[in-house]
Length: 253
Image (cartoon, rainbow, N blue to C red; front, side):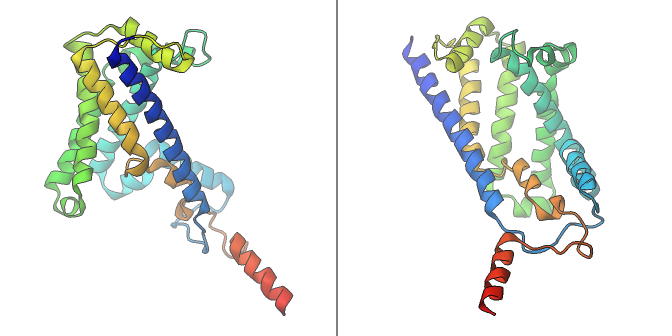
């Protein structure tokens, strides 16, 4: 193996460890945060089925964002939908045809439209970047990291498009390298400059993702304003630590 390939093997394992460990730690942190009050945002569902539907529509359609600002919703939804499509198309580089996911990955809609998902990603990201630049109230609360995150993801999308339409890379060797990471049979990485730029930006994103604003999706499922049933009159809300205090007071009485 070349020294470059060894370097990227080490970096990829480190990035996976940081990404998985960071996301796990953040989810556990969300789980430990208490919810002392019944505070669902009204109008709220009054059944668990309604809560499940509310969360589903939030995840799939970004309902709250749609009601807030239409332009942000358009750019944000286009970006996330294109990202999901690109993700499934990229799975062909990390799974074999005998995988249970292959029927989804090999779908014509995934492979055909996924090829152009990068353009939709760039469109959505440029719109979100323009929002932070030109909308006064958003620019006022934006920090340098907000701009850098958007530019980083734009760089990933643009470099990916360049590999597809400008400078072709050795896809067969690239798949062998990525598959080798998971099978621990390491292969050489193609040394195309655009590919190295693309992978380096992906690695940077993986390292900073768990500690950035980009990790916001898990928080939706732990937000009391979203997951609580609106039934404060029918069922008394009592947090675990509140129950412990009541039990302690009862013993002391």
